[in-house]
Amino acid sequence: MPEVEAKRNFITEIIDEHIDMDRFQGRVHTRFPPEPNGYLHIGHAKSICLNFGLAQQYGGLCNLRFDDTNPAKEEREYIDAIIDDVRWLGYDWGDRLFFASDYFEQLYEMALELIRIGRAYVDELSPDEIRAYRGTLTAPGIESPYRNRPVEENLALFEKMRAGGFQAGEAVLRAKIDMSSGNINLRDPVMYRIINTPHPRTGDTWRIYPMYDFAHGQSDSLEGITHSICTLEYEDHRPLYDWYLDNIEIYHPQQIEFARLNLSHTVLSKRKLIRLVQEGYVQGWDDPRMPTISGLRRRGYTPEAIRQFCAEVGVGKVKGVVALHKLEYHIRQDLNKRANRVMAVLNPLRVVIENYPQDQSEELDAINNPEDASAGKRKVPFSKALYIEREDFMEDPPRKFFRLAPGREVRLRYAYFITCREVIKDSNGEVIELRCTYDPATRGGSAPDGRRPKATLHWVSADHAIEAEARLYDTLFTVENPDADRDQDFTVFINPQSLQVVAPALVEPSLAAAQPGERYQFERLAYFVVDADSTSQRPVFNRIVTLRDQWKKQQQKQPRRRRKQRRAKQTQP
Image (cartoon, rainbow, N blue to C red; front, top):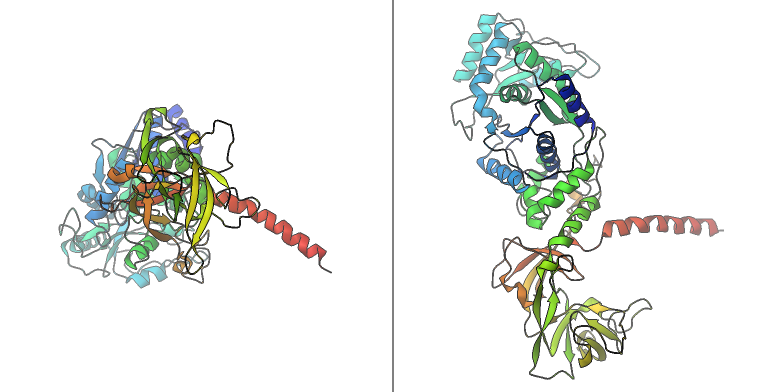
């Protein structure tokens, strides 16, 4: 299990108090309880890191338990993906992999016990009637006409539900609590409903399935969980969690709620993520534009960076949105240490070095990672014809443009100083080639006379470069909060430029053997990862993140724009 930085927060304060009180005999035992109805996303990563991290911090245990109580929405694919994602994040649950379905028989017996003591009943109201009878936030609920059935009748009807004697929607089992409660969750909540769909693990054995609120606390109890960590939307459900445990009279864990993670420029609702996949806005759950853990992994994010991000976000009670650039910051910090540097050109402009021998080529030493001396060096080929980025040349440059221009000298990374002597254009006036000269005395990128060009450019040898595909990913949405406008569907804010494919991009030959999942820094461009689609004939690279924080730069420009706008208004007559 990865090391995590121990940070105090309101949850650790509660746990410390429990330890001082010897409430759970000094034990700390948490669980991560995903529903297998979709892939995990970055919000789940925070919960994973919190639950497993607390167990590690206190020398305790953390279970992985699937809340597989709704077979109509669950698939084995999701179960396998969730197990893979949690393990990829660096966490291990040992032999404590559980499912709510492991406890279906025990949960059924607990439901029977509530019926026997007069605190549960079978209701034959329709789903719409049940909703209407519940009342509102300002009006109390109305008791069902079936609420006071005799115990024996309820036992017989519940057995009939289990045996398939009712169709879906014809009957449910409800707890008998308080239809006038100010907490709507306590107004006789449904405990069991009928679902005529085979279960991924139990097949057709069951026709009735427990609701999450009923299965959750009892599963915690059966596993000996001490602290059941949930997100804030379950705060109003905690009285129900406690009511079930107290009335069944079994071991009682403590439920604690924290604010879930919300990230800018994305959506984290499973319902909306499913729409993105099913309606073709993305190319599957692992599309690198998705906030799913599998999508982030394919994008090239590292588990170390995600864990560090979750640690920095921290744990609190206040809802909010975390800016995407904070996550990207941790990705950059991690990749800067681990990613080898290579050279690639995405928008090539041909350069011919006129005074370089026609048939000569040479190999130059290049540093793999200046942050990691153990990464060593590699050889990069140099020849008469090269490619540089088109953006690194301007025929009529502005004052602060220091890269290549007619008559100007620049340094080629690890190679020589070159000077542009001639610009070749096609019939449309577009620049298609530069004729340059080089200084043989500047091999390695330094001059004996001490002169220092203001710009250093990356490049690839035209004779040795490999054609590749570069996928440039951007945010999936154009606005910070796609859910903010309730009058418009969130899909109207999808960024049409969220994926741009550059083909062919040109990369140095050392990348010929690059394997899927390997990460690199394309010098002066961005961090990239080899995609699963990559082949030896056509390598594919996904852009992970840019080298600099573009978000922060944009935010810094905003105040300046506003100041200029105010000054302009003040000077108007």
